[in-house]
Image (cartoon, rainbow, N blue to C red; front, side, top):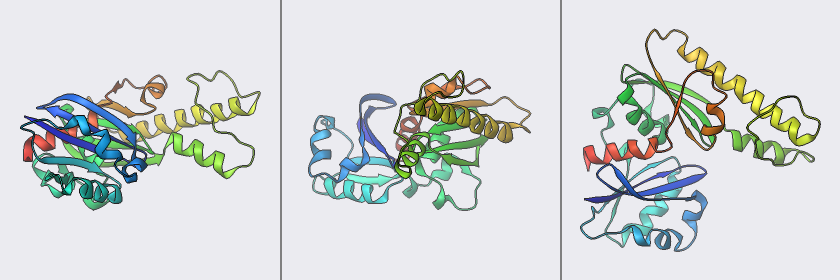
Length: 247
């Protein structure tokens, strides 16, 4: 049977139509557009099928956006749920001080990553997050500045530094402003990412999988010194697992 799930992030939102674990349709848009009149209704017009489940499950880190989604679907007899409203302990043990402070996206990433038993999930989103699953248990993580948001904040905070797109390679220091910025971000995040990976895994005496996701996953895969894989659907797969378990 068909069902709809979604991931509402600080920057972007992804909504998918699935049948069992297969993604049939997927759309990504700026989260801010949720607040535009009729945008979500028009965007999801072709997502609704006959005999479709009336529960829609979201991973969400923007409560106001989720509340807006609930208002939109209230008249359509669809029930909107967020993953933290469910008993996630059935799917993964979370060994941190306060689960309320843990982003829903990071939880579902770890639920999907748990199949590897030991893994480190690096998500290049609005923030750059590192989440640790050890022996099938979520053990915590690291939050670092996001690449794109750092570039934007630097540009907005200075009079003469422009916005720019990261190049994949940086052979030497810059001879112009954009190359100097590119060197700072490529070399800087090279050090940041590899250093955090090293500090997290230094005492691991086991095989573990490094999983990359998010906008800069492809770029930084070539920079990360340890072997890694890219999974741009890890969040959706995790939400789908939660849906199939509980709904």
